[in-house]
Amino acid sequence: MKPNQTLKLTILLVVFSILGCASSLHKTGISIERFRSDLESKSIVVDDLVWKYTEKPGNGETLLVVHGFGGDKDHWTRFSRHLPKNIRVIAPDLPGFGESSKPESIPYTQEAQAVRLQQFTEKLGLTEFHIAGNSMGGGISGIFAAKYPKLVKSLILFDNAGIKSPVPSEMQTIELTGKESPLLVKDTEDFDRLLKFTFVKPPYLPSFLKSYFAEKSVANREWNGQILKQIRKEGYLLESQLDKIQAPCLTIWGKEDKVIHYSVMDVLKKKLKTRLETVLLENMGHAPMIEDPELSAKLVQDWIINGTVNKN
Image 1 (cartoon, helix red, strand yellow):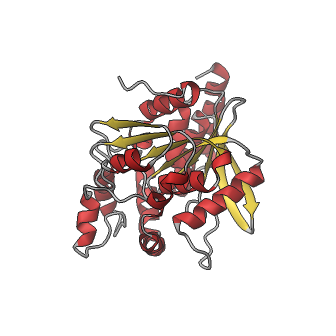
Image 2 (cartoon, helix red, strand yellow):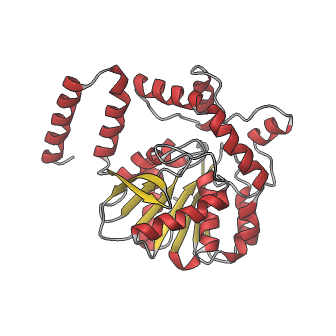
């Protein structure tokens, strides 16, 4: 960190310690994480929906990143920190999630979100960019690439949804028995179970941040359940759209993913008509960009700059 950045961070910490209280500690922690990643918090209104997003300035390639189910823009905060300064990163909260609008009257299927995402990029004046998505966000990104091929320079998928895996995942096996989805949190103690289910090595979270995320997951349980039902009803839409994707594709998967099995990559190899590179990460779960943000950023950086990745 540069000296002036260190000074700013120190001042920021002092101000927060003077003005802050227990109820705002999570905002302090998140603000510091964004500050360390050179991310600016922004807001824009698109078709009467308020979109909250973070942006890392850069004068080179633009990377749009899309979070997964139950997630938000900060799923990409530590990942963004490890990308070169010239890569511009835009991380929105999709409508229905994070700090963006959550009207009950609109659909929250992956296809509907892909259409809204195009409107968001148009409002920002983006004309050609790379798009990356994790889980549900990967499904949305893939559908986006199929619908709007002229906008997408390359597609980057992290453990993406929208395709039926030849080998059922642990989550699929659980849901087929009629039990509730493991992605829904019952109480604050159940949040630890979700972390262990999602990650091999859960990322470090200070206790106040962990408590905040746990409470938020419990509070959003019913709302997230409604969205999940819409996504399940939509089915494996991306799989039917793979032949429409024109951009080269990089797929990164955690081998220990319990949510979506990595055999989805076999489907991509068979049905994608464009160039595909795949990376299977050992001892990694459902969200590599959170579990190992530095490695994930290195793979994406190599892909964007060189058009290929070093798998060694």
